[in-house]
Image (cartoon, rainbow, N blue to C red):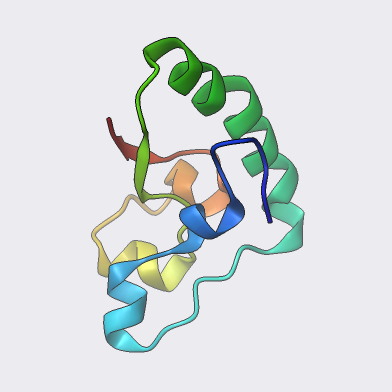
Length: 87
């Protein structure tokens, strides 16, 4: 689903660790408002300001994926409130 002109939900759930291990990393509906707010208020304005592509290297992570990548047990990634980016 497209969130803004430059970001979609797929970018935030794509995960190499999940793919390699055959694991699911779908965004629960209850976190969609968090992701929308994060993208609309932070990432899209940042991209517009920089005028450069922003690649999401890590967005939403479920508990299993978060543990596998060594994320903090209370990481904001668990609630779709964080993204690791490459500009």
